Length: 267
Image (cartoon, rainbow, N blue to C red):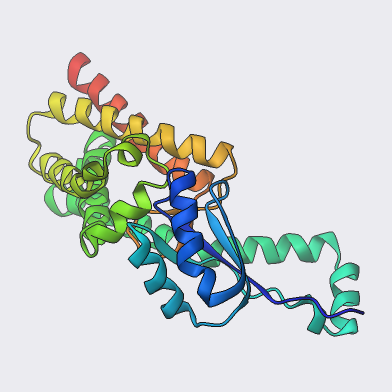
């Protein structure tokens, strides 16, 4: 078997056009034997890289408002032992499904844990005030949305610049106006405080529907095009891939805001 060149793939954020591709390509060219940058998916494949990840990351950042993030392990098929290939080919569909499910849970466990904490707190707050009889659907959604926006804005604000760069990879407005990515975490923070304080519910619901609905459009487009980028819902603290989970997250918030708007008008 002939030796295959080692290729390492990394995810990128912040690319908008061919000019961005050229800038990143030129920045990485001295650090690898070959550089292949693409917009869809937004990533770079380096052939025989001669620098470590941190050096590559700095080179990309120096080229502009771009961020290099880990995407996959180096591809080294030429060194794969024969028995490994046989085991991979003979793996049963059942085993593959189990591995896929386990991988999914491992990837999204931070998000699932945070959602579970927020939901639990939403119920406990009501129980602490009026007991089990005081738990209502409307209040559970209101407290959940307050916790959701407060917690998710917190993670974005930990590194607002990195979030804005990651968000610009798929949000329609942030892609054209970088300032929206810088402003978005504060919008979420304001919505969280508004839901917690029960401030002007009609206005709060409408703003949520508009903001989250518009954000969902960019997410749906990215998932539909199978663009391999990272989700910025929890900032850049956790490396969560963009998937249908992000769609459910955004559309779910729009649906809850719409339901609460209906309750506010008709009750």
